[in-house]
Amino acid sequence: MTDSLTVKILYIVTVSLQLLFLRVALNEIYFLRQALRRERVFAEFGEPVHADHGETLSSVMCGIMYEPVEYVAFFTAAGKKICESTLNHPSMTALCDGDQDLILQHSDCIIVHNHPGPEPVAFSPEDLIHLTTGICSRAIVVTPFLCFLMEAPTRRQISLRYIHRLGRRFYRGRSNLEASCNFCVAAAKACGWTFCIIPSFIATMRMESQK
Image (cartoon, rainbow, N blue to C red; front, side, top):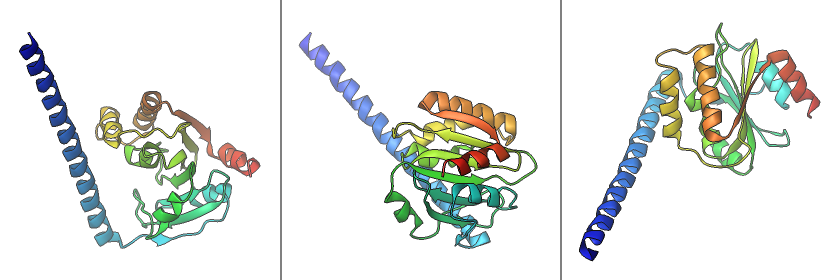
């Protein structure tokens, strides 16, 4: 009886370790693929460069709202600007060298970026990476018509691979308002976040009043 119990325990431990190693390997593969993708984009569009659409959250939101390429900016929880950059790419952006170190000096940061294009699209799985790691507590996507807000009240780390798997259930090759909003609602429910949609002009006025 004791030998049988020992065998079962050893089996459970072995399977658990194998699953752990598999998870680590899959994470390494994922981040390697992301790094290779970034290298290809950088080779085509060049390195990210610093940008400046103002010093306040509302001014940056208004400034990037109609831009034809993506911009990203980070603010402290108190609304002080940390950095802003662009890759001059219509659907991707990146941080300049040294910006990540500046961001990590603060807690509960706010990330804001725009989604160019005729249809307002909410967050993609990649857009939520700074919420999943706990670096940011609020993320904002700006479009000419709608603003999308995702808030993470706790700094609990979430698996980015889980967010990507969730995203594939809803996007399925589509990148539109309905698919993105359905994904965001599901992600918010699964992670304990708060997702809301606000008309852009009201969102910028709200940010202005919070200064």
